[in-house]
Length: 413
Ligand code: UD1
Image (cartoon, rainbow, N blue to C red; front, side, top):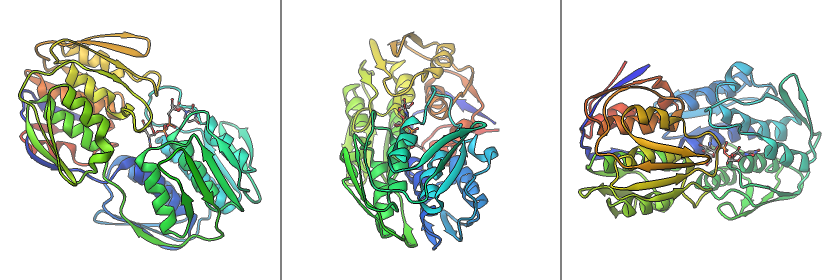
């Protein structure tokens, strides 16, 4: 797929944010903790959600989609999700915790997903091991076995989002109480805990760095609406600021966007906060800023690329330091083709602001890099052709129509 993006857009109006992809993926995995009916509302129909739903269906569960509501019901039969689906999305590894908890064994191929560094899964496995699972590697598959998981104290060397989620799910049906120390603090962790608790689970402390999980014997069906997508919201905020626009971003939790809001204000954008919306406006020139990506509540790595497009047009030199992932600067080469002046030194990008970007034929290499290039295309002079734009669809529902409704002109082919 490709997107043809007309440059020199000014985004004006409003846009509504969908539910969070990164909250939904673990929630859908956690639906495997019960055979009863689980309904998840306001689900964005994006590629990652479709893949994980298919994967759950392959495990024996009946999956139905009615408008934007996904429902899951039925017996978890298989303990081995098919490789064909697992390799397409890293988050498929999240089914490991719930399957292990329910069936006492699971076999999953090492995960795929965005090519942003080596992305090991050692912390997930250390967590399962601490809960009493026996872990082995067999022809590229990870095999975990435990007749009964047993509550334990787990210290994470790094507050990994996925490992925290996987361990919460596994521990939620273990015998006894578990503690995850140095747990990730992301809002998506809190949402997963709320989801499990609404199924009858006993998870406390989510959103702090010590999470307590009291194992229960059974979890029951539930209807649930996940939190809004803070990265989708942030992407539109930056798009509006980058184009010198004025728009309202609706259906958000302002608290989840603090780091993004702070950096936009520092760069000269004006932001007004409502209860569940934000207004973003920029009239003055973009001021350079320093950004270091960090686990929540620090600046999110998933917003790094979008800010780089924006800061390419700043009046002065910005510095972005990527501390969460290796190899997450793949958008730099493409931005340079549009006239950006960016130098990479290890995990740091030095961005010298230029007066304008110019439309070019460029390529999306991963989801957020793709979103960044859409923003660059909107600000550029002339037309940009974004190849491999299907990467963007992995995480953004209707991105072209949503931007077009604010005055952009993007054609998807
Ligand atoms: C999640 C998000 C992703 C986001 C990332 C960081 C989902 C579906 N994806 O990914 O969009 O960019 O959080 O905010 O929610 N690590 C290890 N060992 C492990 C696990 C992780 O060393 O076992 C390292 C990773 O290589 C990486 C860092 O920890 O350098 C952060 O990864 P993690 O927080 O686990 O990210 P994900 O859960 O994969």
